Image 1 (cartoon, rainbow, N blue to C red):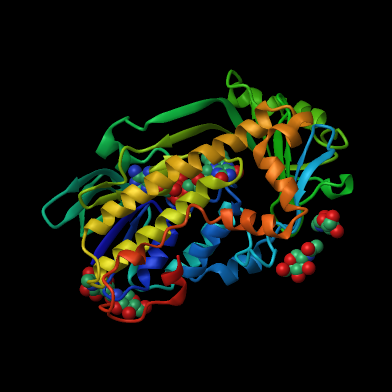
Image 2 (cartoon, rainbow, N blue to C red):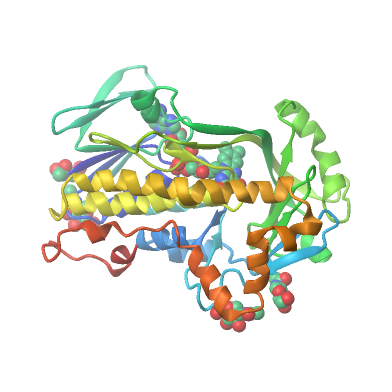
Length: 415
Ligand SMILES: Cc1cc2nc3c(=O)[nH]c(=O)nc-3n(C[C@H](O)[C@H](O)[C@H](O)COP(=O)(O)OP(=O)(O)OC[C@H]3O[C@@H](n4cnc5c(N)ncnc54)[C@H](O)[C@@H]3O)c2cc1C
Ligand SMILES: *[C@@H]1O[C@H](CO)[C@@H](O)[C@H](O)[C@H]1NC(C)=O
Ligand SMILES: *[C@@H]1O[C@H](CO)[C@@H](O)[C@H](O)[C@H]1NC(C)=O
Ligand SMILES: *[C@@H]1O[C@H](CO)[C@@H](O)[C@H](O)[C@H]1NC(C)=O
Ligand SMILES: *[C@@H]1O[C@H](CO)[C@@H](O)[C@H](O)[C@H]1NC(C)=O
């Protein structure tokens, strides 16, 4: 079986690794860029995504280079704690610890692993301009740097080509139902000693104007600060406004010179989901399939859970224990998870920080009330920790039993 994956972002790279282990499967990974994207984007991977990264065989290296955060705290703009999840990652009920590694570092690590597999071919400067479904086959139309077009033939094609997915546009044009928030988020990376001010490893600051998230993202003390800005500001104005924003909202009211700013990146935020994740032999996953705002880190986490499930579906077909209807399951289950969990939970996460009164958080916000309760009661903490797996779904349950050819790893069977 030959699988074409469009997009060597985190989702495409992880799917390549999952499929590279399946007997008889070859992967061609096509990316329009000339190298892996090293911009500092997502950084937090929840336990449901950690499970997929473990099954792709990359978790030990991620743990090695990454950070396991300790406490997660919600605060008001004065920095006062409202409530916390202590030991957010390492609770005994929560073996697959939330792990932090900036996306640029994750991409490089994933590519190192992909490069070790003979049956994954990575092609850079391969811009996919069209995709075509056929009887028993499908094609990617690839435009090289020289402008020459070529057809690459496969049995299945997966669009992992991000928010502006050409694969999705070919299937559905501009139809990408949902909404764009009336806010832009500015993701900054900065060295600043938040610990000195009593901040925890992950902090959500609730404020109608100066809401932000501050989280430690590397073991050497780099922090991600993501805050909201008015959509009327141009990128230049956002950058010019950053020192004033920092001085107003960060603990210690720092002026430029008292922190080391590495990057500032504004981006628009959306809640959107494609009409279907399957059309014939062509599939969509991760940002190409759905978008959500970054508060709570469900964006890439949801994407990694997608490719974990899709890997199981394609593996089932390759091993002869599932027919193509399993791909309809992939479509219906993953879209339902987005509708019922990812979209409402991530929307609530954003509204919690940007549009609620922090002084009423512990009486009006059911989620923060649950966090508070879980801090006092082991059983409630257990239920809370189990909740983080709500978006998981094991597609091997649709494999025909007793017919699996070859070894199936324990990790894979558990997804
Ligand atoms: C500035 C910024 C900050 C962000 N910060 C956060 C954050 O703090 N938290 C969070 O959860 N999320 C954040 N995100 C979103 C998060 O990074 C994405 O959810 C994640 O990267 C999606 O992974 P992906 O593999 O689906 O797509 P991408 O990472 O977008 O990768 C898509 C790949 O496809 C390639 N490609 C695109 N079109 C084509 C084509 N036509 N042909 C061939 N290849 C193509 C691209 O070159 C790219 O390598 C941020 C995004 C941005 C832009
Ligand atoms: C891919 O590689 C694995 C070993 O790494 C091998 O078992 C498998 O058969 C290979 N697939 C193909 C199509 O060569
Ligand atoms: C997989 O790739 C290898 C190496 O490129 C090639 O020899 C083999 O024929 C391919 N197998 C399939 C099933 O495409
Ligand atoms: C997390 O909270 C516990 C209990 O309040 C505290 O002892 C610990 O030092 C905190 N960890 C960090 C890294 O601040
Ligand atoms: C955090 O979890 C680890 C692993 O379960 C445990 O050993 C440690 O005692 C916990 N720490 C706190 C402060 O609860």
